[in-house]
Image 1 (cartoon, rainbow, N blue to C red):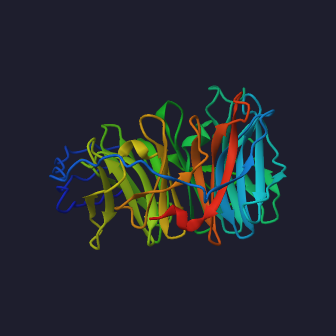
Image 2: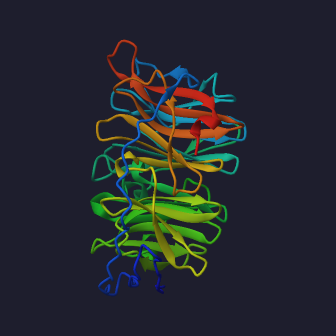
Length: 382
């Protein structure tokens, strides 16, 4: 595996190159401190009645919603039902207002991630069965056609690699790529031409803790952590050959997105959140991020021309923030009816309409059920 050097500008000192899994890693040059910018004070997001609660999951099942994606025809929400989340649930809507159920074939798995793949959707799921030696460490995939028909992948030992909730998916040259930090921290990377039958490519990236996988105009980017604890990024233009670069000194990589066609990553040095991006000379630069406390981030979603960070503060309060470029973040007003015990997990935008999904206490307070809100996309700010 070839290697490449990087440099970090004003805020980041030059670091050493990470070598392949078979070699040794040189001691990194420490990253320079970010500087004297004051610590950010938490900003409590407001609420607005412009978000409308459109659908609640069935409390008798109960139903929870974990993911949403926009399609050319509307929106699709997916999640689970049953006391042990043993059944999948999927809903679709043309406008985000009226929702109809869809039939999802399953082997006691349920979707936890949805992403658009042309006019199809790829769903990544998880569950527990006796098919794998480690209960709870099994993922699954489905492909939803443009007419709403779901096809589940045939089971293969590959699906015992780990849980789907930690998976990242990216698409390159009409192939889907899936990465996750598997059972016992064993890295897993695979690709598929149909989203149902997967080829294990884990050996291409070596031994690391896998984080976020994204794709931009230069190919695939896989962020992770080497066994010595230093962050790394692996790059491949076509998926066959990968280059690994050390980001030592950048702190912990907490997510990656694509903005204006170029990959960017968020990292935390323990005090501040940093934005890592490639300069014109292919070096990596780090700058401090304004308005995104580390504890806020649970999921990063790219919608239209902005990135949305979904998560919660230390006290459990739901918080959502948005950014145009990944460096400056502003709070997003949340549904006014969002009550204690609620959560938000995903967002999608289509034709000027934004749809939020999450969980809320059922009307009788007995269980938590899925909830769907709609509002104008302008509410996402940024």
